[in-house]
Amino acid sequence: MVKLNKEEFNNHIFTRINNLIKNYELIKEDELIAIALSGGKDSVLTLHALKNYQNYLDFELVAISVDEGIKGYRQHGIDSAVQNAKDLNIKLVQKSFKEEEGFALDDIYTDFKSACIPCGVFRRNILNKTAHELGAVKMATGHNLDDEIQSFLMSFARGDTIKFSKFGPELDMIHPKLIPRIKPLWNTPEKEVGMWAILNDINIHLDECPYSHLSLRAKIKEFLNTHEDQYPGIKNNVMESFKKMLTFENTISTKLNECEKCGEPTSANICKACELKELINGE
Ligand code: SF4
Image 1 (cartoon, rainbow, N blue to C red):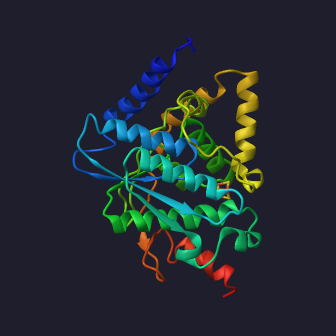
Image 2 (cartoon, rainbow, N blue to C red):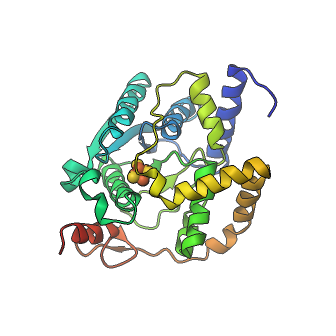
């Protein structure tokens, strides 16, 4: 990339995000958008970018943070979320596994092959329920270009083709209780998110989760980064291949039911969160 000064770099990154939001109509006038704010660099950039986009469109923002209960790690993220939301004057709603589910991730993760399995299921569940209660019509997440490529490769590796329908900067409304996600950083490389945070001296949570090394995502991320160094352009090629497959993924059925236990949307009879709670409680 051509060398840019701070102002030019900020302009470059925000223009790309603004164009994505505009071209895909990710946000419409008067909508209330919830932002999943972990306090990491991606969610914090999403918060700043959407605040910036309010200069061009009239819509509302609310941020939601979820404390999974990971000792020595999560509190830094929460502090950063609180600080950034305060600096930008955006309301922040704080939730935790402990209050919502009765346990911290640290208490239950050993029941699973990877802590990321219950972490992702319960966090998504809490975020969705909270956004729905707040009246938000969309949930903005900090998924960047690298995350998107990793997610797709993970679905490939697991043979989980249903997940292909989650590819793209916005997900369709497929159930009234499932808040559709939008990904304003969908085409922003992770490296640039880090550069933005450092250049602008943004208060972000940079530590690695102590459980992350156990995840399939971490292995795929390492594979892609190593190969990108050796064969520059590989990530871009993977992404372009996925884009060409969008027509195929659109034909995949994504009809949802309501969970027989809690009423949350699910593709099965019982949602993943209730299924995991049964396992944790030994039912
Ligand atoms: Fe949760 Fe896994 Fe992310 Fe850690 S790395 S916060 S356990 S999803």
